[in-house]
Image (cartoon, rainbow, N blue to C red; front, side, top):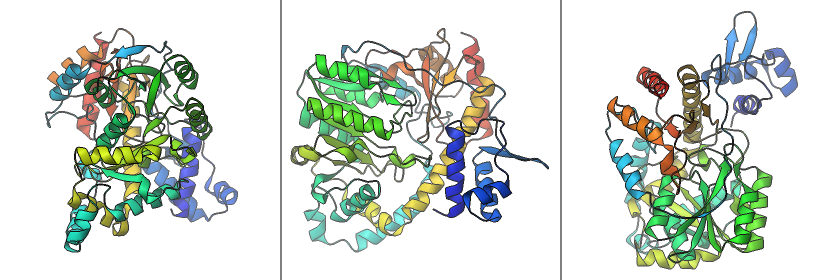
Amino acid sequence: MKRYERLADEIANLIRTGVLKAGEKVPSVRHASRTYAVSPSTVFQAYYLLEDKGLIIARARSGYYVREHAKRPLHEPEITGHKAETTEVDVSELVFSILNSIKDPATTPFGSAFPSPQLFPLPRLARSMTHALRHLSTQAAIADMTAGSNELRRQIALRYRVNGTRLPLEELVITNGAMEALNLCLQSTTSPGDLVAIEAPAFYATLQVLERLKLKAVEIPVHPREGVDLDVLEHSLSHLPIKVCWLMSSLQNPLGASMSFEKKQALYTLLKQHQVPLIEDDVYAELNFSNQPLRAVKSFDDDGLVMHCGSFSKCLAPGYRVGWVAGGRFTEAIDRLKLMTTISPSVPAVAAIADYLQHGGYDRHLRKLRHALETQQSAMLDSAARHFPSETRVTRPTGGYFLWFEFPERVDTLQLLRMAIAQGISLAPGPIFSASQRFGNCARLNYGHPWTPESEKAMGTLGRMIDTF
């Protein structure tokens, strides 16, 4: 990262954490130059970058100020406390009906689970695939079938090491996307009827997997900024025969919450005390646009309890379906289950990504992607504050591409979805993120697509619909 980018990150973090508040003056170029021991031109470059991200604004003959996204910025949601109970999962019909209703490519894709394909280097990946397959030996294609490419595992292990986690290659299993990794982890640790601790709200695919495997959910509330409620989790582990926890400790979907370093360490200590394994779903970790690194719970694992799952689908190669799991003490069981089911990930897709990680400029791509997502988040927050009721609450995640909206209690987001679809707008209503179909006045909106006049118009239309409740 260049010096001006590091400076921009430091100031952006002061803005996100509220040290520099909306409307406040940013340190002058001269003052920042002295404080951070950089040249005035470096400060200017940093401020231009922050302007581009929509975080600060220049005022003639006055300097730079933290941008006020709106006259009345929306507040963040608060954690919704509830007693953890065992819940039979039965959400698939609801989820499938909603997913079918938002498939039309002509709709404004606020309900999508994916960012725009325009954000990914797909032509460069195609060249990587051609190059890799040209040099792929038949022997390597067969030898790497189950666990996956040795070269890709080496590249993944290097990224773990940069983030503070040392892993042997033998612990990594390449999978057909993160969903296969998560499924294999769950099947390796549970039997039908077992209890699984999950988040509330949780990604709807989590609920569908539990339903398919005939597992029961124990919903643990999640704070919109701080992550899963450890007090509720501790009580549940002490009083219920929970077999495994499935949690997202960083940039949780749908809230975007990230647990602190200390809280992740406390989570691992709690799980180790109870000897309950963790399936750590970490597919959004590379989309963190804060300068605070997102260390995985896996980095504390000295007992093989954590199965850490990742994917390239959200940050590099949608459609390639390449993920992985660092399986800890469960690696052999995961490996055998994979051999009995899908046998192998796609050899061409794996070869392409391994080649790209070596030669394609992955970190440069990630910087551009994070910049785009942060800019688009700012645009959606700004628009929501203008168009949605003042009682609306919204999360402010430091990465990913989702915002979680909590509307006034009178709003029914299942009905809102039906009204929105009729106007060519999609959204993801709150009930599909809960085993007990709670969060009826909440919705997840996707800001992972370039912001256009159509996006702005759609937000205005949603605001008018919400006002009718």
